[in-house]
Length: 152
Image (cartoon, rainbow, N blue to C red):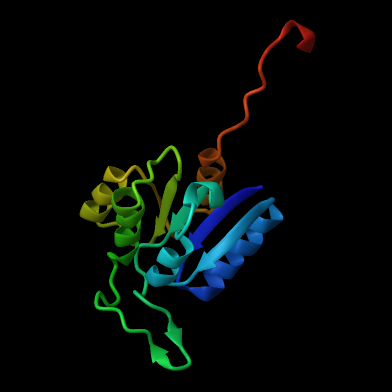
């Protein structure tokens, strides 16, 4: 089964995307903040997920009934970029082992350069959903069937 880590803080959007992807046969894990995304990335990530879809502007930690979790970075539009950097630079997971799609409303050139520099694709929120769905399906390799004379 194709597994996707979806890091998106807008609950309505995260749930809608999860439902759509699951209806297409994907298994989706939701993370609603940078810290939840990091938690989901513990362990053997390469065997857990085939793709990460990450929003750029995330809370550093999710609101809870007890208030905001303590996190020194705070909320910022760089939280998703920090999570991408965590995957590539701290966990040393290359793009061919865990593709990343950044799905964000922010279209700042420097942020886009940072995303592309980390080997991630960028899909702008507000574009048709089909663009994101196509980028997701293209991120999973198509199994190659070896050709043999018996296939004829």
